[in-house]
Structure formats: C-alpha cells, structure tokens
Image (cartoon, rainbow, N blue to C red; front, side, top):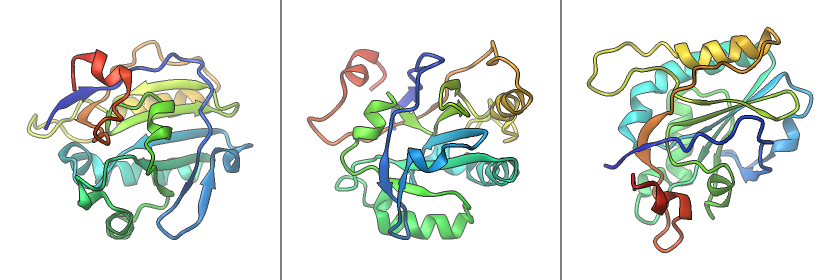
Length: 197
C-alpha cells in the first residue's frame, strides 16, 4: 500500500467533463448536475483501507448534503484486472451494502481520474454551482490507526461555506490514501513525478 496525497488541483478549475456508467447501468454526466448548488466528486474504491475507514461517515455526509441541493458523485478508477475487488460488479455490491444514495461510477479508461489529477483514494473535489473548484483536500484528519473520530469536519466546513456564499476556505489540507491503481504503462506524468507512487 502506497500512501499518496492529493495533487491539490488549483482552486477555480472548472470540473472536467465525464460521462460514466453507474452500478445500475445508467450513464451519468457532469452536465446532469447543472443547476445544483454544488457538486462533490469523490474518487474512491472498494478495497482501500482509507476508504473503508471513512465509508460510514461519507454516507452520513453525503446524505446530509444531498438534501441541501449538493450533487454527490463517487468514481472508481482502479485497474480492475489487478484489483478485481474494485470491479463494477463489486462496486454494485458495495453501494448496496453501504447504502450510498449517490451514483458510484466506473472509470475504465482512467481518463476521468487523469483529467481531475486524482491521485489517491479517497480524493475529494468540491465545485460550486458554476462547477468551479472551491475545495480539494481531506474529509477530516482521521486516518486508519490514529484513533481520531471520523467527523468529516474539513469537508463539511467547505460545504457549509459554499452554501453560505462565502469564499473558498483558506486552510485546505491534502487528502491522503492509497494511490489510484493505474493500468500498467498508463500512469500519468504527475504520478511518476510526485515521488509518492
């Protein structure tokens, strides 16, 4: 397991487009969320211990903000040949077991992960109503084994700030997790250059 940090995509970046298939076979695109107050894109997977550590808290957070007109989307980009636990079939089972109310999309070519410069699982990107990036970073400072509770404090603060119409938070701490499992030979340049892969 390689511990990898978020690349911290520049604030103000427009959310890259995506059109990916959900676990029920429905195609979901970024344009489906035009008109919402915000869009939270989360790169996650099934097998990562960092994702498992926050999964219940992530469900609570998503449920809280879906009801406040924030769109939430999960995307798994891992190489499923090497990691069959992250296959679309297993994603469907995971979504049902966790009770996620948001789409859980599969990125088979890893092009969407690369467009977002996603590096780890979990990796969080919060966009405003115009789909411009206002937060990228950790959900909170809880990690497997550090005995800190999963509260979602950092991400909740960013969401509340967005809903209140305030500017992006000044303090944004990079998310930390397992590296995205890139298809051999298709690793993005930022992964190789980061020194964390």
